[in-house]
Amino acid sequence: AQTVTQSQPEMSVQEAETVTLSCTYDTSESNYYLFWYKQPPSRQMILVIRQEAYKQQNATENRFSVNFQKAAKSFSLKISDSQLGDTAMYFCAGGHRDDKIIFGKGTRLHILP
Amino acid sequence: GAVVSQHPSWVICKSGTSVKIECRSLDFQATTMFWYRQFPKQSLMLMATSNEGSKATYEQGVEKDKFLINHASLTLSTLTVTSAHPEDSSFYICSARTLQDLYEQYFGPGTRLTVT
Image 1 (cartoon, rainbow over the protein chains, first blue to last red):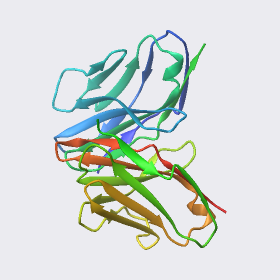
Image 2 (cartoon, each protein chain N blue to C red):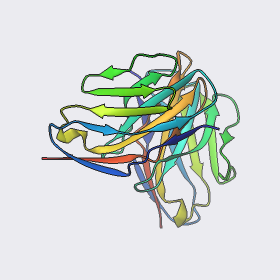
Image 3 (cartoon, each protein chain N blue to C red):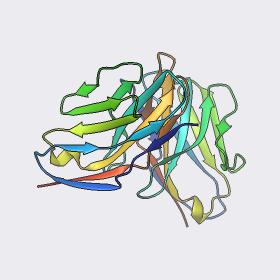
Image 4 (spheres, rainbow over the protein chains, first blue to last red):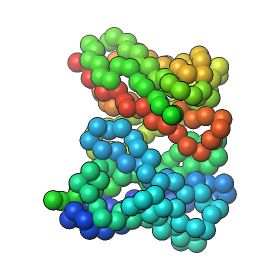
């Protein structure tokens, strides 16, 4: 069975700082993809970044990057130069090809001015 | 590209009535659509997976007779909450997936349902 665990319910950082959100996952199968989604107050789910589990290189999208540690089954999200617009709920998620996505419980991130 | 819409964005209905929520893929064909439920400050809970032209697959604990899902075309899926009760009040989100990318899901903006 797949599980995705986020152990930080809530975090706050000052604007322009760097913040890291933690996530661990567990699956016994290959062809696994990992995602970070952002849900701002509008509640629209926005894909931040995705990582193919078979790739060693960490995915990066502008200020967002992941630290993917396959052996540790860890998939953390780093947000550099945080901005007020980054305030949102962040969900880590994982799924196999052509299957459902499992979501973690989320981390509520506050960027303070 | 890959836009998913939901209608209505919010709805209020009386207890005992039924309400239908539509999920449309606007610029792509969605072979699979997913319906989620989200309570305040909680994560998304998958309710069911629907493939075009097939019966939906419901997650354990989800009443299939209460939450009717239809995926009659490659661009439209509907969720009907039958005999709604106040405890059905929630935020319902749909997502869609294409054959071209069997990993990623594109999310609709959600529908807020309030049952009085």
